[in-house]
Image 1 (cartoon, chains in turn green, brown):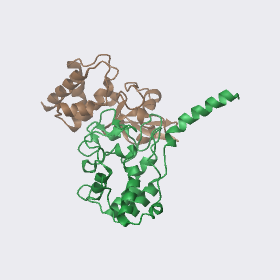
Image 2 (cartoon, helix red, strand yellow):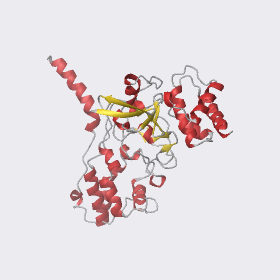
Image 3 (cartoon, helix red, strand yellow):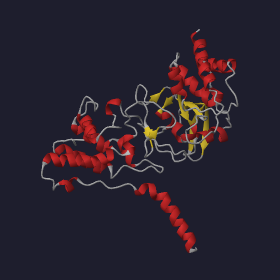
Image 4 (cartoon, helix red, strand yellow):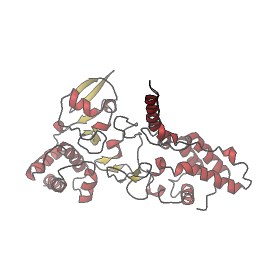
Length: 197
Length: 153
């Protein structure tokens, strides 16, 4: 193989793999031990978790209005879809009209058995991380969840887990779901303080 | 491994890759060519079929996903709603080139079966995933209203 051909292949491979290169690790809770103030430490833990919560894989399905977004630039979902009465789409234009139980590489359409948009009370787009934090703690807006249930949701929910297995050339959320779960657990243990902005 | 399919009320067997798009099985294996290939990425709606009474883009579903579930293609629709939609489509001469129309009709039937008196907004939202390059959208909307009136009468 000529060196030019090998070089071209390397460039093509680098281009193919590039979308996954952006997946970054999350800091472990232990790495925040040097922050002596408990509330400050709690806020710092949530800011680190916020790298996941505000990642497009999560934000895209937490829209403020009727329509979810897609892509790393969070452009409006195409084709036009709306949340509908049950957050699973309009009549004849359900999420499951296109999204099946698993990512489907043949068409590039992502999938999961529970595919749906987060309820309006859990809208995160356009909100600051501090606002998202307060919203997550508020049982009136978080689906009546306790903090323990929030931690379990973040750490165990399989649709949340899709964010790290998005298929295609989609960039996964940072770190792993287990790392997010550990950060949220540590955030709760330190008083669940919210960032000011 | 063979997959058992229920297509238009008839049991069919598919012996092939379970990840094969349902659309290919419908068109190439079963010869039911009323369902169209448009984009292959669930963007245009030409491949719409019914599964369990709901719309499904058959280009974007592996055949294994519908094993044992009732699949209806444009060739198999025969309900009162389907007949009303067919009549409205003919009465209003909706079709221009026609390529997208089987998908449009499949979506319209599900809409009317679940919402017999849809508003313009209901129609627009239900039909948003069915693209028509001839831009027959106004006639499609009118035909859905006409079918709705016919069903109510």
